[in-house]
Length: 184
Image 1 (cartoon, one colour):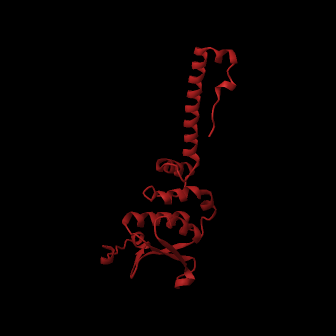
Image 2 (cartoon, rainbow, N blue to C red):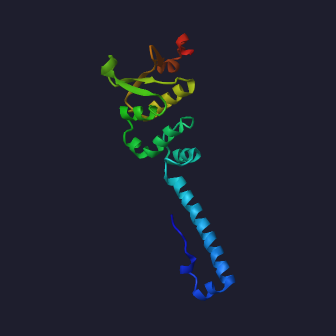
Image 3 (cartoon, rainbow, N blue to C red):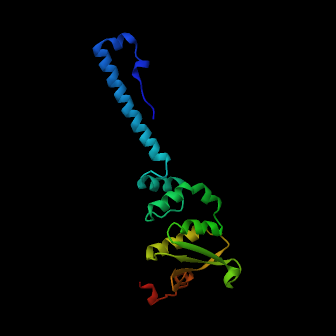
């Protein structure tokens, strides 16, 4: 905290006069108020832990990062705080885990050799609250951060004892999949 002492800057003969002293103290109070507002504004744009949600949303746009505006505020803080680090891991399973981890409780990326698929294919298993919006965002996030040569086979939503595969390629092929298990 910076404290302004106007007596250091005003000549003593002005401080000796009651009107000069009053004017100097009024200027001091104004400068202190301005300083407090500037510090608050600086805190707003530099401290990710205390900055308001609207500022996080603005930073996401400024940084041009993958971001879900409907995500919990703590996930948003994490994405903004680690934006540069996340750019460095794009194209890896860690990037998929990092982004989807902000929306789902757990995220596991299974490479092709782990479940017997064709080379360069992978699937993602997530646990947590499933919704159409979360599914749409997960697909968008995976497409944005995956390795360009890799192919996402499925996103599997794991709801405890029920596992629901959500086939990515179905819409692209014109196939419609209906499942009663999705109605929770």
